[in-house]
Image 1 (spheres, helix red, strand yellow):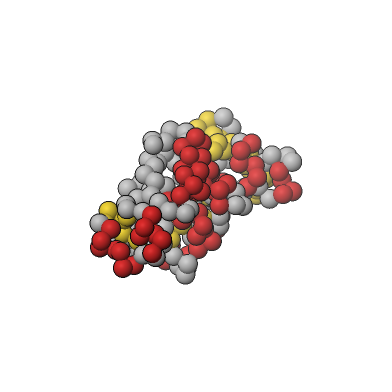
Image 2 (cartoon, rainbow, N blue to C red; image 1 turned 120 degrees about the vertical axis):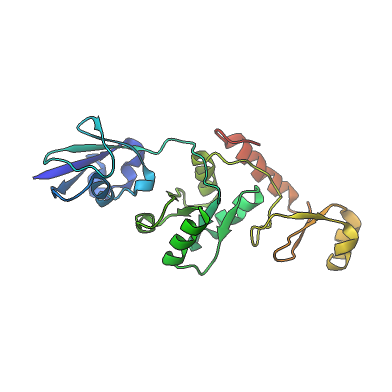
Length: 239
């Protein structure tokens, strides 16, 4: 006796390679297993599952099924809202965190947080945990999470901005710590600037958290290109 989990085409890459051709994963029938357990046993974190049907009828993740049931799993609709706390990124997504902060998006990140600490912080601060670790997303204590697609930071950014409806506020956050920047008079930071910067620029911001000073300088064109790409690619986002 078995149950089959049949994800929509957009989710089939989450199946083990030997099941992708058939487009479904057979699992042994267990009378105590819930729909949620079965979906995750097939390799699909519930954070990635939208509507689920059992033999064509909608079911919840807490439901139980009969032998021979086919579970059809749809992806999460896009875009979705972000909880009040913003994002939390795991240790492998530091470059993505910097890009999100450049766009003014609240993105917490640490290079030494372990899995239990990430889950605890995501729950305490109402943040969406962004990760490429499926096992991390399957932890029961995690309230909000998302599996980030893409091997390069730009691809990852495209995926996050496609999935979530987030307002963009470029160059308003510290790329190092994520704090909101405050405008600062040039004379207050003049002693921290190189002579060429003092001569060439007049508008500055400062991070109240780590003290870094920002201005629209040599990397401005690259940052502008990133912002323009994000705005062009957005679906449901606000500029």
